[in-house]
Amino acid sequence: MNRNDFPILKESVQGKPLVYLDNAATSQKPQVVMDAIVEAYSHWNSNIHRGVHHLSQVATLHHEQARQHVADFINARSSAEIIFTKGTTDSINALAFSIGELLIREGDEIIVSGLEHHSNIVPWQMLCERKKAVLRHIPLHDDLTLDLEAFKGLLNDKTKLVSVAHVSNVLGTIQPVEEIIRMAHERGVAVCIDGAQSVPHMKIDVQALDCDFMAFSGHKMYGPTGIGVLYGKREWLEKLPPHEGGGEMINHVRWSGTTFNDLPYKFEAGTPNFVGSWALKTAIDYMQSVGMATIEQHERELTQYCVGLLREIEGVRLYGHSTQNPSQREDALGVISFNIYNGEQLIHPFDIGTLLDQQGVAVRTGHHCAEPLIDELGVPGTVRVSFGLYNDRSDVDAFITALKKAQMILM
Ligand SMILES: Cc1ncc(COP(=O)(O)O)c(C=O)c1O
Image 1 (cartoon, protein in one colour):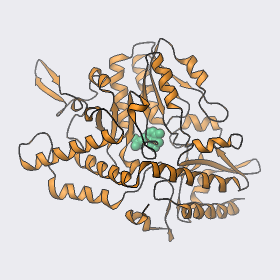
Image 2 (tube, rainbow, N blue to C red; image 1 turned 120 degrees about the vertical axis):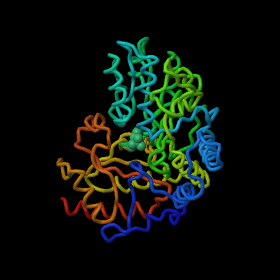
Image 3 (cartoon, helix red, strand yellow; image 1 turned 45 degrees about the horizontal axis):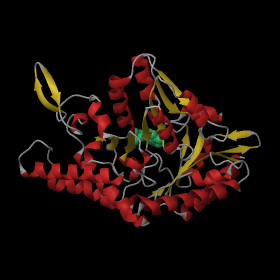
């Protein structure tokens, strides 16, 4: 893992070397990704799919090559199953609208889980409001694993879709999505996987998973902001109506009506982010040059190393890495949430985050856009540490030293 590939890691914060541990929010970018953006604007910037002229054709080739690359990366059957969006949130909103139009009627039910990011709650709530449908959620056991028996009980003839996170952005725990997909499919129910926190950290094979949809964001996987993906099985995408209208997504427009384009263009209204798609392709190349198995192994080890050190600090309470169930440590990837208590008194995570920042350590504090889960934990928020491929034990050591200092100041 070459940290020198990431120029920002040489920055200082508050006069201290930057220790960046907020990768679940967004990852840093390697130089090659920034170069890809400059290359696109310097050499072939031109609107795609529309021009007979050379630059437009070159830009189109890059965009479609990027789409094929994403398809190969997640092992989709075809590039027609890859829809470029702005990110995970945009992907889930698009799906919620389209599937809502196709499938959801009054009284129907949609199931999410008790540990979702707001992006995988609010679009479904809005859809349920619009269609007078009902949003249900899979409850959590005390150890913060999903209660699959309860899930079984929730599935019924009114259930039309299940949408769950693959990896929790608060706990880092890997959810049993294979089992959830199998159980839902047994009842003929489609499943969407929120892959925002899994695609950057582990090898994903959508055919092996057999999920019907998957959403993820480029900026969390070393790519640029403003580009993301909605994967959908072709048979679903063929049936779904488009969620937006405009240029690109049409076949013919007449005053009498419009016919829609083929997949995947039916879902890509307006000028697409063809520079972003190329930069995302470059980010995927970068990850593959390191190797997805290597990235996963490295981040698992780092997570375990950090959890081990946190456990030794008095007053630390970890969430989703409970001492009651240490085996869960093996099922957590890249994200650790915790709080520090002074006796029974919680030290506010914001205070810890501020003191860490003063020592150059960037972590996240608060509800992490997962308020229902944070409510369930019964705390105002947590401190969250999250790793990327460039982090190493020196980052963890710097974080632990800074945390102990913060603790001394606050206790
Ligand atoms: C699990 C999960 N889902 C969805 C999102 C939303 O991603 P974006 O803001 O890139 O749309 C995030 C971002 O933190 C996330 O962690």
